[in-house]
Image (cartoon, one colour):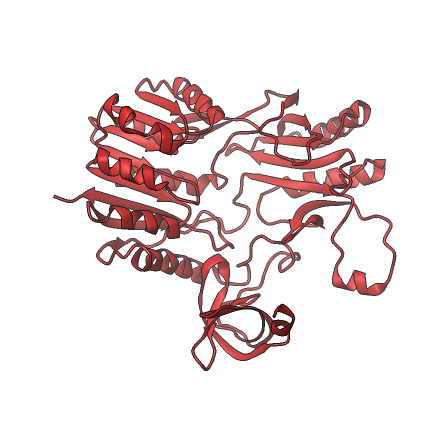
Length: 470
């Protein structure tokens, strides 16, 4: 079946809109939907079918017959190969339009809700270089271009420092440039790569699980201070210290340098000890007077400026008068909880990750917020009848769940709690719409505000305000 589909080319498909995960959507002459990768809305394409379903085709563009007027020239030389920034070839104005449409359509189609206000999407002032955290992987199995493969040449040096190729996890794209994080991110990455090659340091071999250099993470704060984290597969003190000293001497912007020795099959550091080589081992961040300690394992929004706007709008939607009890579900490190705490009587945050709760408590103390209380546990288990019976009733509930949305048991508890107002922050408007549908008998959706946290991608956040029906 799959081989048969590779021979089917759909011709002259006019792409009329954007679909989930950034694909462009068109229709055949017979009216069947076609989801096309490698093109943008407005293009007319020939597309090769890779999957055929009863209601739609999935296809790859093989020829652009007519270019869309919405096209933009991609900035990055790696566009089309790298798995990120898939909308670099689409004007930012149209990116925002399609993101807003997606959120609106999800609420109407999945949520079954008709009557609500849609505020204009909050676009990002920075459309490039907006991320404050990036992670790159070392590999001795560099991804080879089609030209290199066809050349028949035998490449001795396949070392790479960059991103995993989509659906080819063992292959790494050797990055020459990246437009996601501002300088000196590119300069640090290239300096590390060149130094490692020159000194003959071993790049990680994911297949055989051996080597020295494994990953490189960089994060910055809004003051221009930088943290660098190296993940090493094994200890090699002499080469490790020489590399670190080289980097610290060359880049004075680095305020702390930390490392992990990780010989596990996976490269997650959350169960690993982080060792501080230079500096404090963390950065301090500030948002509208609130201070946050950002460590190597800390979760913090990667687009600082847009995160600040997101929190401001969340507080605006909550419209607190100062005497409210607020619940903050999926509180993480308590960023939103503390942001609203200065306008509330009491804030209760719940989160499943103990390290995040520990950080939330530390930040509350750091910010002198005595009206914040945090609890750790799986949301569907801890947020139960006993919890509601032993805590003051919430006037306002804020929820910011992961992409999967809220467990049905959590939604049921929210309805039992019956706060006057709910502010639902989501990174996935489809699961958000599903949850809103479960609450629409008891709550009126007043308004939504899409927020673009990730320009050049199809991802979009959304804030929804619900009020209890009379």
